[in-house]
Length: 176
Image (cartoon, rainbow, N blue to C red; front, side, top):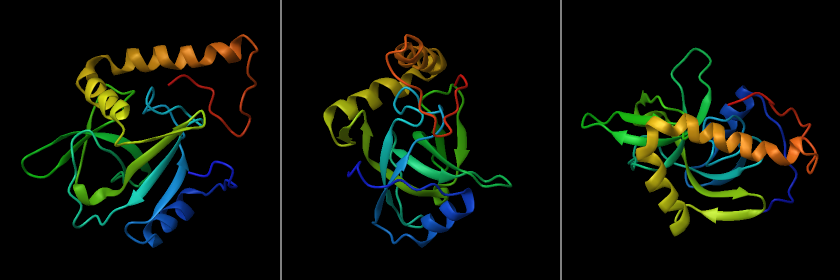
């Protein structure tokens, strides 16, 4: 991933159109916003590389991180991990920083994670360390919130001590 390329900000509708116009198999980078996937991804620090999939033929796998649209009025896009797949084909999704799950249809899945960049270190999802983290973290769902809060505050220490400057590009400074 080229981290030196210019970033551009899109509103929800522009992003929706970008995703829908993207050819299947194409990849793009996306800066993570929000804390629902903490500690795996850090708000406005982690950059993920996603690959567009064909929603009609895509076969989901447990532990995979996917970008999907929520079936609500505003239909936001969300990046979460597949927690379980029911026999009827419904996919149970869970954010790494959440204790609750939600149920989606597999056709709501638009992209899968291929790489994550955090602190200028690019890690493919096929790397053993990422697969191990996913395998260990997923069953710990009841304590996700505690782990995510600990990680959140641990990453805030350098800012509180004045060792790092706050990112002022519209970062949400609220707790996860």
